[in-house]
Image 1 (cartoon, rainbow, N blue to C red):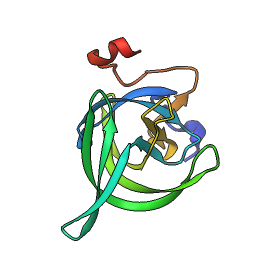
Image 2: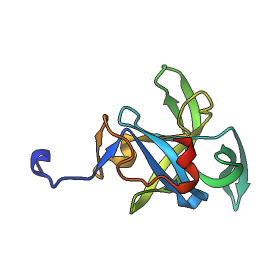
Image 3: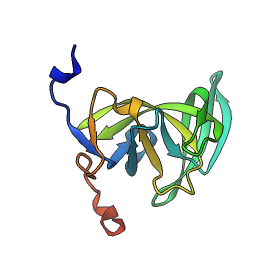
Length: 151
């Protein structure tokens, strides 16, 4: 189908509030980055372990409170960041929720302490679902009441 005649898709801003319900994250501010293929989530530590013969990871998140999360490892991939540095990262599968839509995505785990956003939503996660307007912000996700002071 010709992309010029496809039905219109909803528009995201360059940053959005989203949720990761499978990980117990009710809201997180994400940078929408069409230049990044894969989505990434900040993890200040990651340790692997085995459960039922499968590789899992336990990782720490800095949100309003530090929390520990566990997820099955989908893959390990070399990812090159915007600075040209390549890092081997764990990849997990989880669901992302933006507004009233929720779907599965892949997330890499990495230390994003030096970054402004704890999550990066890459183009693979939004492909075919949304368009992005880089001049706008927070078009789809609602800012949770607890975060009103932080913005």
